[in-house]
Length: 380
Image 1 (spheres, rainbow, N blue to C red):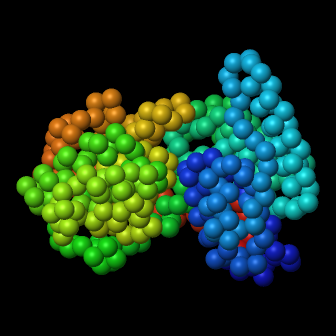
Image 2: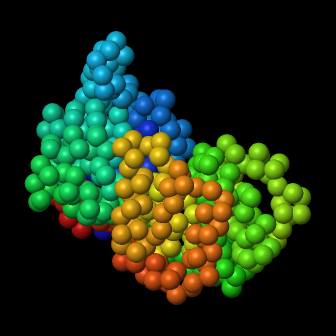
Image 3: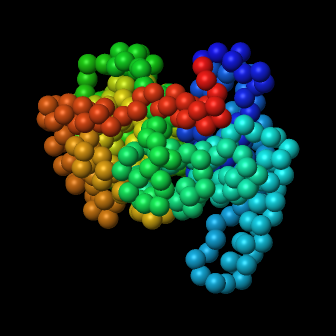
């Protein structure tokens, strides 16, 4: 796409935050937009207390904060205070929209997204929203009725939006998928300094870690490394890294086939050289594993809104791309049994990988960008 087809730079306003699942897809889309339209002008709207404040600023994007918070489900003084806060946030968002004058507004979920997309709709601006999970969040379900386009990561999400006209929604995938696709096993192994020919287990507890998962994994490391002769890439989460290091025997900690990280920026390379992933079932993880065709054993977090991670995991299980172990059933022995069942049957792993790839959208950023451009009648 050539930016010279527009007389003026494209102006995109992005709103999304609260969790990485709302933020990272938006940033992936922005990075792709800037590759195609180097002169595009972007503003990101979020809250000062959300993860987005730090993440977006570190990305080098202009960040505008507004006030926003969730609404308690029962009548209470807290509900009144929340309504007052969100009322101020809506007025702030309206001012941002008026001052920036975007060609299109993209909302990816979260409290700030609700105020911003609604303000843009009220001002007659073009609005596009994107849902990352199988079960759309409350913000997306509310905004779907007024947005010009509703972009979904998985077609299964449409059943939860029965009042949205079919011509309004489109399956684009998650833009993050495009950033992880394309690495080879050899390239990933070289990046992480591991043997590309050995069976490799990738364990990810999330950016903040998952204590129950870590408590089940650490007793199994000697089994996997010594008895099973596996390579293990273990991303503990920053919160638990030092505690896990201290709990491991020095010989195990220095084992040549163990790679221990608090956080791993090279996640695309790690996925490319792994045979099985053990992780939570967040939206970004689903986008990544389906983009690269990585079999997964999901342990969905039961602490998320509407238990949406379990729905995410079940969808991949039903498609033959993953297995699931509920946290309520998680023990080291059950985890070991599930891992052994898969790692000892490479043909089954191959079948799961193929099923994952069938679900993947490795050009998702391009697909979402095309929707945005169509919405404002920009043509390459």
